[in-house]
Image (cartoon, rainbow, N blue to C red; front, top):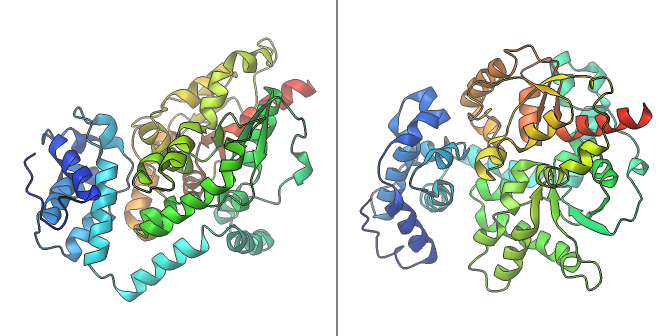
Length: 420
């Protein structure tokens, strides 16, 4: 793609990166076939190729309107297009640059700005979100059945966490919303890794990974959250006697962001090197378990009765399969552990959660969720499992069947064997 970037942007770090990405696009259109919004709306401007043209026009000095902003807002950043693209176009990075520029040039209506402010202020604050969901949990018995499923009942006490001090240690990101909604997820991860000879260290000072604010176009705010996490983790990373082996993340939406810290902070003279190191250490929980699969299967007796529930359907979050390119990793772990997985049609398509997308684009989000649930339940599974808190709660809002994180059922499988 030929580009003529305006003088205001072409020599900046953003402009140079955007120019390289734009020039890598060859207009092939393969991305249209895997773009969820293009499939629903049929509008070229709601496809990756169309949005690339809009960003190109923006950077070449063409007028920018609310229509431009709308088409960029409608993107889920699912990155299915990146998996499909034969040219390796780094579309998500280009989109971040384009959205940031549009946000500075197109004023949003006051109510839209307020909603976005609330989302990036309340949700990442673990104390506030904990209080809010705690109040909702108190009223859980009064909620309708499907809404009741969105809020987990009170979890087991914190002293369920393993206390073994193994030679191998890793950090774990608590996150912001997950501790309030599904606190057992990280505890299950800690128990599974404990059985594999790995201790997890939780740093309570580490908060939101920064994705929420960053993808709401409050990009500097998101970068500040990333810097805070780096500051909290750095003493553990550089510990003289026992530096941590990895940073484990159970929410794939957070994982894909932490793995991108090195890129996002590459121009920060203070944090660039540290951010690159943090990204090197970041691991989705499935990567750790897969590397220990021999030890895991040795803990399970293949002749014992099949786990219950046995028949499950796995939803691979976009952040897992497209963002981190870990498609098939969780499935192989579950199958090796004795679970039967349903075949899921169009497994590459987004469920419509996409961070705050389900709140800001509710109509499109519900359509995508309903399509995804139809595919997931087609084979009548006993349970749905996924790898990201956002997908988990979003899907649960549209189905009576339980939706859980896969690490929890693996934890129960191991406990079932131990008690048996």
